[in-house]
Image 1: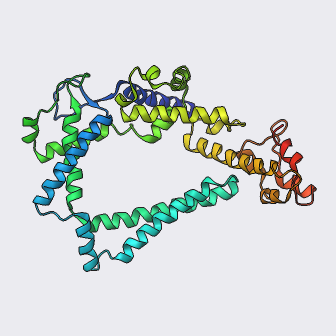
Image 2: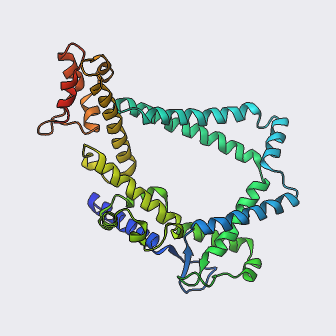
Image 3: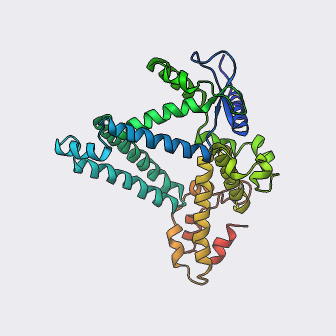
Length: 346
């Protein structure tokens, strides 16, 4: 039986509540055939844990070099010498990254949806090209000291992040057992770990920060992590810190904006950020025009905005009727004055 759109939305919200609960607890339960049948808990990383992971990486990196594995720098030089991945290929990869970065910068300064949509398509195309080039390079690089250190330190971290208790006192797999674990068992444990934490993503954290079950509590904490979580900032997991940061970010956007976003995007963090960014850019342009009282030439850059553009920025007048800058401008001979722009805020 197919679920209705409302049922799907409700199911997703329930899933995000589970993720929210994990973030508040600071751990996620894990089940694995490598572990016993009792509950086991993955501790969420905090700033102190990252210090240990950095040390792990350094130790594994040194070991990799003693094993004779080349560094990435050495491998790049070798590939260039063999003409497998040349300086020209590297330049193409960097140019692709810079192209996408510049497009994002351009997008951040625009406010017309009709201008932004084509740039979004270019960004998507540019990111795909970058991914393909990077994957090609990775495939050619092979096993380096850095890749070994990343893989091995991650495996050791997984072992040191799974506990038998919620207080994180007793490891589920002690060092002796871990030293005797087989490669296939380690691979299975890594898969189970990744499956258990797959919903702890930045995208889901942003979504949670917009939903009522989070906001109803967050708006009461006076922007204080201590009030919300009951512990100092330095003791927060990275998930807790990210959630709090996004909660404050969206709260400030709502409080500072002069417009309400369309209902259909209120729970979509990326579209919501785009909405507020477009609105802010448009208001900045209008503020500059306000400082040029009597000078209407600068407003010509806004002529041509469609009704869809203005609606996307929240500019409406009357019973849902969208005001058109191009229509107003045409009546004024192609130019808009201060009063025309002020009318948009009535």
